[in-house]
Length: 309
Image (spheres, rainbow, N blue to C red):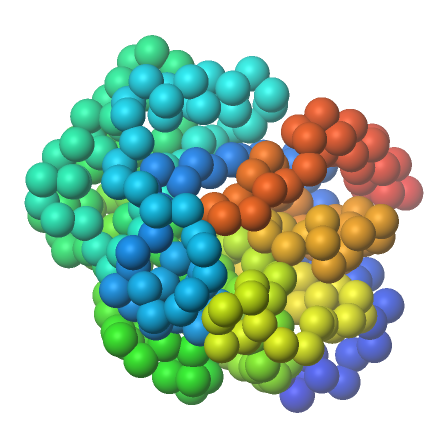
């Protein structure tokens, strides 16, 4: 089915967008909520200049700096994630992309998590080619995460050390070796609503299965430390628009939801979102997993009620 035009989306009121998005969510995704968690497996010293990122060498942010953490630490975090209700566990490393030796080490971690913990494993390792992705796939990796971040036309204002097309090619490489792909972006970088539409349109063309929406929390020391905070209305419109553009995908609310949305964050799940990142993020903390599990149970009951109407 041909996706709606931006002109059509722009003409819709917030209520109309949310009503349509929630209907599509219940029709295509049911009442389930997808929960995942990530761990910062290697932090800081990144060569890239992404304007939002605390881990870039180009900015003075006091972000943690360490190499690949010990396997035992990662296994304990995977066990905790599974115990607290997460359905997927993802390892994230800083840097443009991993060296071959690092790929082999992470592949060993993936094997160990599968054998000892039994939780589906994802990885976010940056720009990668076919060979490295195949090593991870053969080790048991099920999904690769690689955000496009923003629209192709706005991307050069956010990053100059690599291109949008390099990111897009990585997604295609992951799919070519048989991995599912999780890809989304960050909103609140200074882009327009049309840029958010264009990003969702590209993600739809690629056919990704999970789309995280991060809401920028400005970090002191980065070029975006004084960025304007998005309004709740802008965030809800974006979530609903992405659901309409990607009716089959998990629309996953990730970084920034607690700090930006605060007490109204449950509204995004009435605008079509049906997944979230729980626990901590890369350089910021989240809220206790128990609170998210409680919200999940309430939302699933609410969705059942709405679906029955």
